[in-house]
Length: 226
Ligand SMILES: NC(=O)c1ccc[n+]([C@@H]2O[C@H](COP(=O)([O-])OP(=O)(O)OC[C@H]3O[C@@H](n4cnc5c(N)ncnc54)[C@H](OP(=O)(O)O)[C@@H]3O)[C@@H](O)[C@H]2O)c1
Image (cartoon, rainbow, N blue to C red; front, side, top):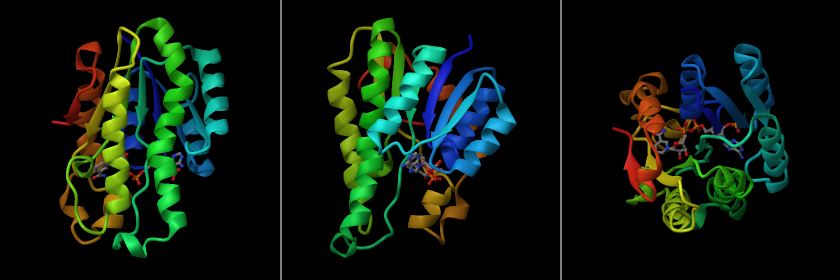
């Protein structure tokens, strides 16, 4: 059955691969990202009923307007996929400027909370829907030079666990580690090794059906695409 799927960070990488796979499989995709040119290309390519909008998930007002428009035009989503995130420039924590640390946390953590704040009440009223918060291997382990990113993804794991204990009946939230995939993000933190990993088009063949199978039984789980 066709699902209504909201996904953040749909302009590149894993979000673009998921949005494309869902749209061509007959689901309705509502996507966002900051890059207005990429958003225009997506609207041109997929058209009605899909919708792509240029917003910054770190901006609660922009998310509120985006959610209000989506809820009024389409209703509550079956899936809310919080995929948008930033990676820090690899450096020891004390060498990372405050502005870079702040904007990473604002996107990866606050952005996820912003989407949940504005979509969850309508999903709760329907007693149906799954919130997928993208985590990482670095949400469950750590390495040098990625402290801000690790902090943000450990936060996503904690936020998801706590949220799972608050959700209205019928809903579910999971933290999802996608695995290691050759995207712009991986090339930022691992420029020499990224090409040896699968690309998003290969990854999505497993990831899209994995996500679509999630339901109320999975509430509170920390999962990895497999
Ligand atoms: N690739 C991996 O190996 C890997 C491993 C573990 C976890 N992950 C997680 O998987 C998810 C996707 O990663 P990826 O590798 O696909 O990253 P990516 O290639 O860097 O893409 C990130 C996406 O997020 C969007 N984005 C960034 N800041 C945003 C903002 N403020 N508002 C709205 N959209 C924003 C970007 O679009 P714009 O530039 O248009 O804003 C882009 O579409 C992330 O949560 C990441 O942490 C990835």
